[in-house]
Length: 402
Image (cartoon, rainbow, N blue to C red; front, top):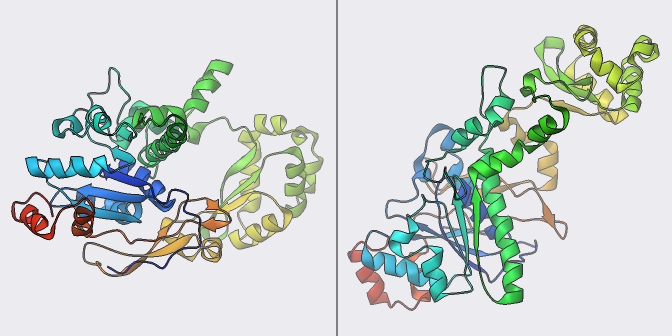
């Protein structure tokens, strides 16, 4: 598979070897972040491949998004020889990452206890549904923890809990795993010893809703679901305007309110003493918002956007994900990059993917390696571990590797 020319972006983790036993989103996100920063990330897959390679619908983008910049080796962990290959691979690693059920890795001698006994410098990133405790035996999914962790309650309308529109806990759980790995690498540089890092979906979700928990602790008032919330700002909402288009408009300070009234020609509202301060406007929101909606209904979204941009007021068009491929800012700043798709009907074709949302030395971290085909790097990696060509052929024949 053709890969990408060297990027000018910094690669602070170049020379670091990461072996990941991951699937779905959480674990692969951790590996992707490390890979984007230059680490050699080796994805260990079963002989039939990571199942996200062939998901339909909402899962169709999982594998190509979260597995770029990685190498793939197929290993049959159920085969004793295959498990031995995996342990040998891990002995060469700086970091091992996994996101399987508790106890799974120990069955193959691939848990932190076993690997650190051979390689005390190894950093082991474990991604689970729950940190150790009463719930750690449960099977967790992003939607499960959103429901039990208050996020679905906050997102939906009262009585209608609704999961967030993306895999927020899976993705952020992987990010926190990567943050833990980076901290452990710094500590290892001081002590020479690795450690285990644990990240979990449920605890990530609780961290996300912590602001609402603290709101209750401080005010004594339970946080209402976002569609029914008491807003901190009077003008902070979606407005339906001309031709049924929608636009988000906001004025989050008293000076912004004055500018809001000026650019829209609402001199009467600016002069009305009932609306002088934000807290006054919040109190009168039930009558103020309908008034604003009526006045804005005949204005076009484009005209409003132009006015708000010129005045420096917060606004946002209501976009669908597919429309972001044409976003002028993303196109101008290199926020999208080409990858070659590894699987499915479009295998071998090019698609654009989103990059990590930060720069290093002014550069976006780009794509060095396309998402790998299953076992694309098996022979290369086994040879690097000292296996001869004949031994590699033997491993293939006995279905220990793919």
